[in-house]
Length: 420
Image 1 (cartoon, rainbow, N blue to C red):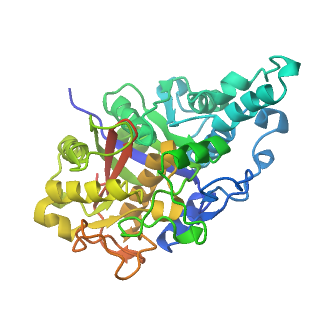
Image 2 (image 1 turned 90 degrees about the horizontal axis):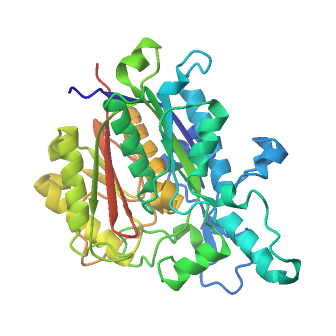
Image 3 (image 1 turned 135 degrees about the horizontal axis):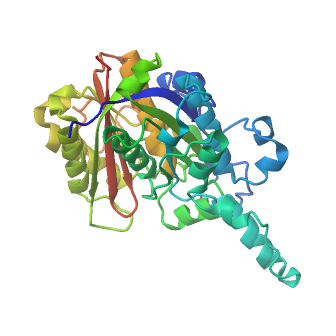
């Protein structure tokens, strides 16, 4: 069976550094940090008092007030990103066969804000009995964003969510890619959303010592590959891509952004939360994505790394890149855009896939910000080009995006310039 080719025809994003694709991309190539003090809840007793929050988002500007109250913020963000991507794609919603349009949209956690509100109220007011909002369960579950997108547009193709922690939305994109190339859908709306900047989210990651406590300088707290890194910075937001079968896209005169050519998955099989110290799972997933794409290491120009700014993870990923790419690793551009957006958890892969796509379109590699001269980790090879602090122009024919999640889940995606 000959596999069909899959292209990207639409992008949408709402992030800590921009609420539309143009605003987001401008911030990314200019090295803007999205970190600031948390405004959602009182952080007085918390070790971490900052995060990368979405700014200036009013759900009532996007939804009827009654409908907005039926959705957790993570689902609201998903619908906003999907709307932008669908409009960007130019899909004619009146003429397309909606039976052949699917939605695979993921979250690593889902409606944690709703969960905390409902359970919190119950325990604060036990005398009231179990008075739960009738929308509690559908607001909380991690598949509901995919369902909401499907219902909003009437898309009746494959519809579900994948939960693989911080690899969730990359796994979603890979599944969407596979459905199209196997001929099981013409169009897929795919990506991920997350909004876990809550007392439970921050407190839970604090308890694991996973997130930065650089409260005196939030904007510089996410510093991947620097010796002084002390954990990731929590982020939130959503990213959406419209994937389309090539001939379907050509037939309707779509603007083709780039082509998706490979997806890879692996497991560390090592630890609940830590990456394998030698990067074995990361090596395997990059080898698999290259094989799936039919590319060699020398075909890749840019790697958008997982690069969370954690002590172990950054080292192991750099080791894995050197192992897979050999001497060519020193000719690559590498960057961690989490230095700007923070870590969007289940939405990270989608947002970073968008960055990879835009790097291919614009021949620009965004920076890894916040690295200071001399702040070098002896376990990291700084002969690698981490694209520190300033975007670099280069021809980007193909870009690889890595995402790794708690539980040892690894997923990688490759996009390249479209050529007929």
